[in-house]
Length: 139
Image (cartoon, rainbow, N blue to C red):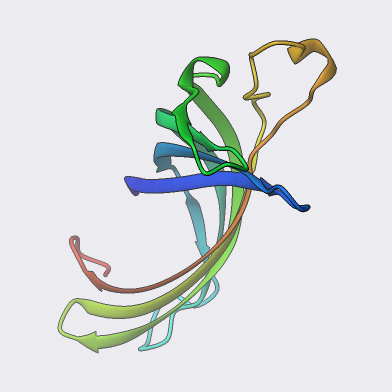
């Protein structure tokens, strides 16, 4: 389980660019399958749900004015994630890791005007480089 700060959004290209940003506190729950359970190299694949809780949302319109538009987005986003991780032993009960994952938001997050005509879902690809400290007998 992780607890992550995530900034998601979109840009509408053109001569007058509109930018939307939504900040979330994300809690993904990954169920892992280790391809190798012993040794110094332990790659794994994982899947599971991801729970996002909206912190705020801001829009920047073409004249550079920034406005809070949190009220037009749902307070939470439930998604599905899948990924692949490579990790190597880096010390006693410590591992270096590279993690790639894709998360698709199942929740239609736009609840503003004309929401019946607009289908808006988060879709995120993430790459993480980290250093882990093990807890437990089989780390």
